[in-house]
Length: 110
Image (tube, rainbow, N blue to C red; front, side, top):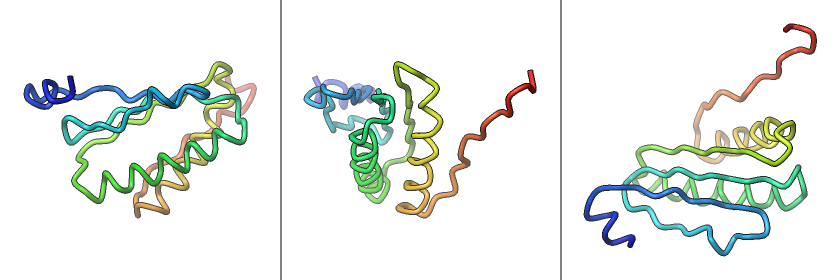
């Protein structure tokens, strides 16, 4: 399947779900990556999994990756921003990037 996708210049989504890392392939068929990350409400393994992704994304960026999309979500979305801030800080440091972190809306503004 990956050879076919490569031949037609089509990418594939990589999904990393807590407890199901066996389905998180590392194949890039085009110089773009779309990672769908399903967190586990800030369980300590969420941070180690993000650290692993930082290393992988740095490797890909150092080796010609042109576009990178990382979709962070959890069953309780209230935790997604916190882990996203952690990831952006680590990715900026590791890769010399300047990605803007999400900001939190003050309660009562809406």
